[in-house]
Amino acid sequence: MASNFQAYQDYLLKEKKYSPLTVNAYCNDILSFQQFLDEKHDKINLESVIYPLIRSWIVLLVEEGISNKSINRKVSALKSFYKFLLKIKQIQVNPLLKHKSLKTPKKVQVPFSEKEMEAVFDVSQFSKNVFEDKRNQLILELFYTTGIRRAELINLKIHNIDFSNRTVKVLGKRNKERIIPLLECTLILLQKYLELRLEMLEGVTSEVLILSKNKNKVSESFVYRLINDYFSSVSLKVKKSPHVLRHSFATHLLNNGADLNSVKELLGHASLSSTQIYTHSSLAELKKVYQDTHPRNRK
Image 1: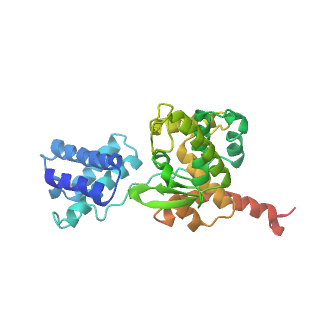
Image 2 (image 1 turned 90 degrees about the vertical axis):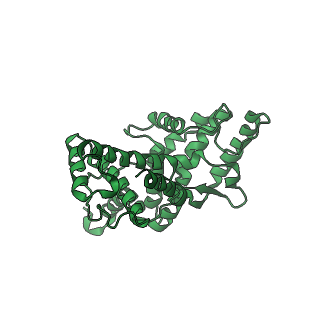
């Protein structure tokens, strides 16, 4: 099992281009199933498993109070591993071939409203022409005007910004590149930030675009806290995160007439099904317009 497991890790990292964090999560889920086999089924190896054994593990997880969403994630990791074993001909049949995921309630992500976005960009919050103020303003600006993910923003390099073409090159999931257009207001803010960044660096060289006051790349937790702090003053929503900003970007584009395919490309989604989760808000807007304007609904 050890050699197959190592080969699987290499496959995820080198061929599938998954991030180390994702690979670690997959492997931990598979190892938790292996631990179950060791304790409950006389240390049977993963390659010899049949579906009833997996089913008994799922039942145990349910009894332990693990959520259906978490169980589905664990089983998905296991299914991926068995697909790999099938690919390298270590097994003849994937034991999870006919498995159906457990039902999970659909959570509707609530985006920030356009009014909340206007409030958070209030000029008074960023009146100081100092490095940290402009950096924080730029982080908010890039999230809302490009829809990029938190990890994508953190890893942006200066050379990713093309001022002449008014675009930014983003390295997304699985090292997939995409080009996103930049608004004039974003370009102006970028220019101001870069001037202050140059002064702050005092001769130190760094390719990373978004820097901390210690001249290092900012962390994911820092960016999360920053978004949460700024929106706490303008929004009562429970969840205030970079992902909600990405959601707001997509929803506001759709509300204002953008087509789904264009939003899909901007977000870097592999398929339309991923983008369609953002359409509920635009549908709500469409319903409102319909109710307000259809002649049959006029009083």
